[in-house]
Length: 424
Ligand SMILES: Cc1cc2nc3c(=O)[nH]c(=O)nc-3n(C[C@H](O)[C@H](O)[C@H](O)COP(=O)(O)OP(=O)(O)OC[C@H]3O[C@@H](n4cnc5c(N)ncnc54)[C@H](O)[C@@H]3O)c2cc1C
Image 1 (cartoon, helix red, strand yellow):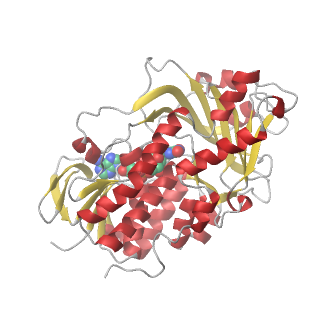
Image 2 (cartoon, protein in one colour):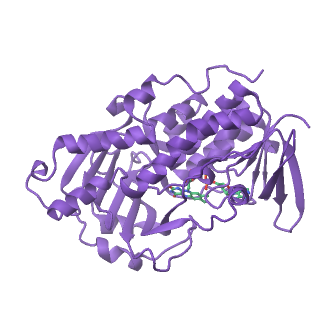
Image 3 (spheres, rainbow, N blue to C red):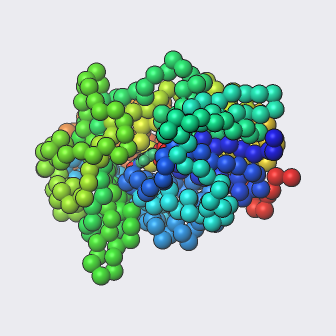
C-alpha cells in the first residue's frame, strides 16, 4: 500500500485538510457522499486564527473577492439600544482580518483551488463512507454508492470529516444517537440590501429567546449600493417538543417566525423588511453533540463537525474545522503518517473544542444579551446603569480565550505549518 491519507467528507474540513496535505506533499484522497458539490448554506464567519491558515494556503486574494473583512461586532437590545460594540479582525489589532463570507462560495473556492492544484482525481463524489476497519499497517475506509455498490480503500490514515451525522463517528460511538436539541430554532437567509453601521458590521439583537443576527457577506455593488446581507432569526421553544431534524438545506416559511420580529424596526436596521426581501429562508434546529473522550481509534480519527459539533453561536464552526486541518497537517510533519500523529493532533484539539461545545451551551458570546434583558427588559437610559464596561469587556475576552482566538495568542503563535515544510 502506498502511503496516503483518506478523507471521508469533502466539506470545509475535508477540503481544508486536502489542501494542507497537498501543500506539505502528503498523498491523499477525498471521498464525498453527494454526487456533485454545490455552493450551499448561507453566511459564516472566519476568525483571524482561521483566516491566517487560509492566507498560508495562498487564498488571501481569493477570500477578498468572495467575502467581507468584518470591522466590528455589536450587541443591541430588542429595542435596538447599543449594549456593546468592539472592533474585529484588523481593526482589533489582529495581524489577520476576520471574514464574513457565504459558506457556499468558500466551499467552492476550496474545491476549485484543490482541483487546480492537485487535479480532479483527488476527490471522488458519490461515495458515502459507511464505516472503517483498522489493520496493523493500514486504515480501511468502507464506501457505498447510490446504487448500493460497495468498495473499500486503504490508506496510512483515515480522517472522518463527514459532518454532524458522521458515519465514522457513529462506528466509534454506536450508542450516541442523534444530535441534542436545546429548543432553539434558527431561520437563516440572505437578502440584497444596504449594509448598516460601518458597512462591515456584525450585529446581534435581542436575547436568546428572540434574537436576530446579521452581517454583510459581500461588498456593496458600486452601482446600487446593495450588498448580500446574511441574517439569522432565533426563537426558543420547549426542548421536549417536536422539531424538524437538522438539515442545512430545509426551506421554511416566513409566518413560522417573522411575526415575533415585526417590532424590530430601527433607524439603522429594519428587520422585517430585510427578512421579507430574502429569496429563500432555511430553518435549522440549534443542535450539538456531547464532547467525546477520544477521536482516535488506531489509524482513524475525526475532525470538524464530525469531531466537535457545537451550537453555531460563537462564529467559529468553520474556522475550527480549518484549524483542525492545519493541526493535523502539522502533526503529520512532526510524527509521520501513523497513529502518533493522530494522537498528537487529538491531544491538542480535543480539550479546546470540548470546552467550546460546553461554553456555547451556557455562555456563548451572546450571553450578555440575556443578562441585560433580565436586568432591565431591554430598555435603559445609559448602559452603565445596567452593566459595567468592565463586565462587558471581561465577557468578550473570556469567550475569545476559550475559543482560541484572543488577539495576543493569535498574533504570537508561530505558523502552524512552517513555510516550505514538506513531509520528508
Ligand atoms: C449543505 C451544508 C450547508 C451548510 N450551511 C451552513 C450555514 O448556512 N451556516 C453555518 O454556520 N454552517 C453551515 N453548514 C455547516 C458548516 O459548514 C460546518 O459547521 C463547518 O464548516 C464544519 O465543516 P465540516 O466540513 O466539518 O462539516 P460540513 O460542512 O457539514 O461537511 C461535511 C461533508 O461531509 C459530507 N458527508 C456527510 N456524510 C458523509 C459520508 N458518510 N461519507 C462521505 N461524505 C459525507 C457532506 O456531504 C459534507 O460535504 C453547512 C453544512 C452543509 C453540509
